[in-house]
Picture 1 (cartoon, rainbow, N blue to C red):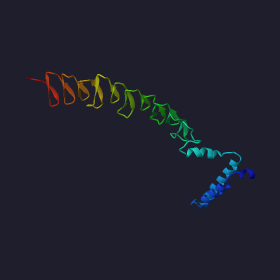
Picture 2 (picture 1 turned 30 degrees about the vertical axis):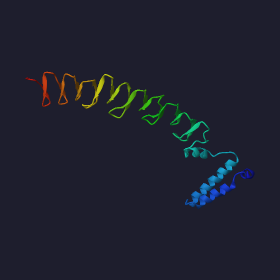
Picture 3 (picture 1 turned 120 degrees about the vertical axis):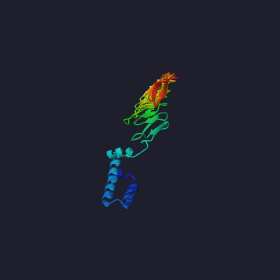
Picture 4 (picture 1 turned 135 degrees about the vertical axis):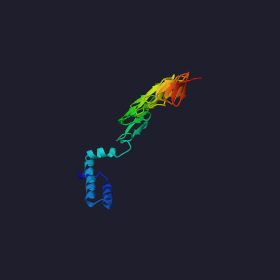
Amino acid sequence: MVGKLSRYNMGNLFDDAARILASPLPRRQALTAIGRILAGSILAAFGVRRADSQAAEPLNSSTCRPACTAGQRCCTTSTPGFCVAASRVCCGKSSCPTGNACCVATNGTTFCSGVGRTCCGNTSCAVGSACCTGTTGQEFCAGLGRVCCGNTSCGALEQCCRTGSQPFCAVRGATCCGNTSCPQTEVCCGRTVCCGTNQKCLSGRCEVSKS
């Protein structure tokens, strides 16, 4: 053992011990730390690594160990870090192909979006599809060419009315009127009802026109 210990750089051991003793640590903690260094040195002399050192070293590091090779990148999206091809996108404990986005689900897990897709809650939306946020904060995809409208989405020939208690879809060109919509030939009265062509809106009510 002495022969093997002689291969260890004893100068480093003495320097580490001196720094610990000179630190503001209490004497008992300082001696414990020195004892761990000495024990680690003895184990290292026999080519053995301490299990706690193997666990602690990467956990407290934001870099990859061993270092990544040429053409790789170090992902620090998890602990410990890990190496992937430089073209990939780091994503939690894994990685995504080029052109993907790393999405975070509502429960905190991560997943890859798919090429060209947009992260949207627990899923991802296709190109041209909007990500909508509902009235309770939930996210969902509107669908190609559709428009977000509260907890749903409206088609190309529709519009989103926001005059009522909840957003709703109505025919494009109609007049949004409270929780309903009025055809182009009618008038919204008091934001509650639609008055026909032979009616007038008086004090929030539709009355037959006498003219």
